[in-house]
Length: 233
Ligand code: JB8
Picture 1: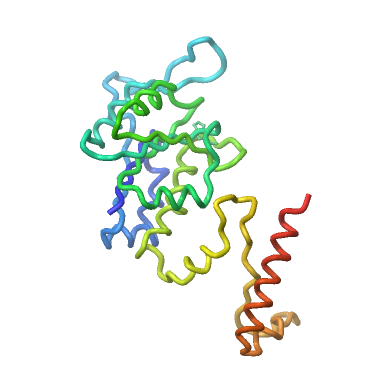
Picture 2 (picture 1 turned 120 degrees about the horizontal axis):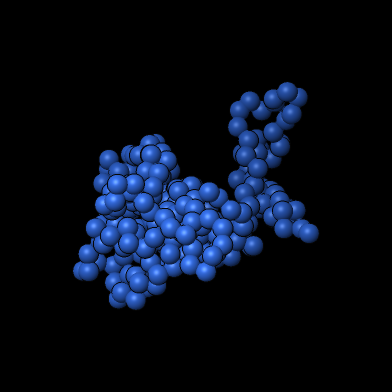
């Protein structure tokens, strides 16, 4: 069973993880997802989690202490932990990373806000023998915090775990079109369903032919044409 913990100052923002496919996967005991409020690790009256940056500059930085206490509270020294720190400065998330994460035991997501988390949190856990620290970004744009990025990573990762998806054939089909490198991802062929004529637009005749060899050939050609179109310029 894959254990996933998320730490955030906006735990309610992560509640979609309890719904739908992932909610069912949790009911089935395939994954376990727990959401933690960082402010539970503070003792001061204002439940502070941030302070001004050393060296000056705009904005606030999240202090290390509540992060360390939160991570220590949900992990132990006898297990392997992959700590994922969301940051625009991280390694770009891709399908290969999702496949790698889907084989882990315990994923802990640190969802920062403001200007991010004191760099010593990643440094500290990197030096522990049972931890791997991953600084990850979901793309070249800047979000307000790590919560949405963590949900993207969890959705892409958990759907690769046997039993999470309704139809495992779609995974097998996908795996043929994905290389480790997003640049060479072969995009899908176009899909059609009933009716065969919609607002005067017909479904390509070959798909109605029942000729599975010709259909496979046509789909491959379509996927290659679309991939070339997507990657041009
Ligand atoms: C503060 O764009 B992002 C991202 C942005 C963030 C934080 C984490 C991730 C924390 N801003 O991936």
